[in-house]
Picture 1 (tube, rainbow, N blue to C red):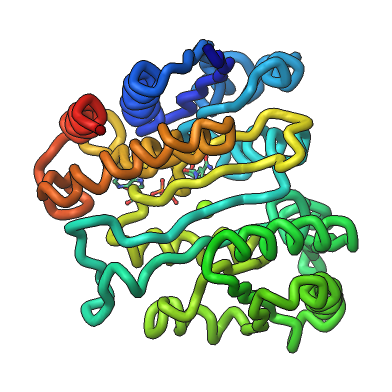
Picture 2: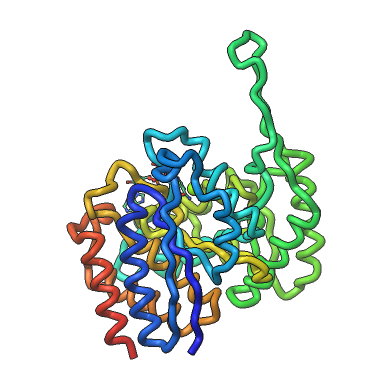
Length: 354
Ligand code: NAI
Ligand code: MG
């Protein structure tokens, strides 16, 4: 029997509510599909930082390396400097483990209405592939003379040929398993060095995939098209910051940020990959038991797919769709179901899954 070692990190806020629900679904899937999950919990995040002075243990990355995958909620607390969670936790894990792919599906679930009044389920089905290790988010910069009239600040993006090529190849290979279309969302008309180079290298990779339709689109136009013509997208290949922003818009197209799932993937499997919802710790609703757990549960399905348990992953997605089709909704979707009730309903669907 296959056995996978999973590191579970709730993080902060709603992470404490949705990760346990996601794990219950994963355990049920394991039982149904004949594999085992060996789950170890780590108390890391902004709460841990308040007590211990860092977001994870000093040897935290070494500990995590021993696992097959990381199942993560979200980090960040209102009382903690909000420049720290990404720098000291999320980006740290993503870069240390070369999780250079951020895979974020946008798909309208059964029974849900998109805020896009004229769009149906067939119109909203694409994946945002966000470059996850470099670009605008390398935090390469400085604030100088902050309190002076001549104060200045910089953040310099970094784009490397190797970094662009690997995310491009991943995207074109993914497109071959989907509808054979890649849209590079860029802004090379104004970022005339970094994103012009990004376009050029992606163009070179595109030439190696003549069976995939390749298109370039500026991010301003792409934002409008997400809303007006989402059906034109299949694989959206984009940079770290543009992908961060557009995937929240993608979450909104599905009806709620709470539905968005993601994988921070190291495709070579040299290191564990990390699976988390696209949203943050949602302090405004934390502790009330009303957070939507679907993004977290769906992220678990992405994790199982990455581990090679495709049938179980598909079953979880079917179960989620069955639950949304029944009309069971949390408050973000104008329903009154609790986090727990959604989790129990997904588990119940899995028990009956043929
Ligand atoms: P957020 O994503 O936590 O919340 C934005 C809005 O969406 C809020 O109104 C929230 O209630 C709602 N929302 C989010 N998840 C939901 C769910 N599962 N169900 C129902 N509603 C949901 O973003 P915000 O407020 O900008 O950030 C809060 C904290 O999270 C900050 O400290 C931020 O740095 C952190 N953050 C952490 C991330 C991570 O750990 N990867 C990603 C994004 C933000
Ligand atoms: Mg984000």
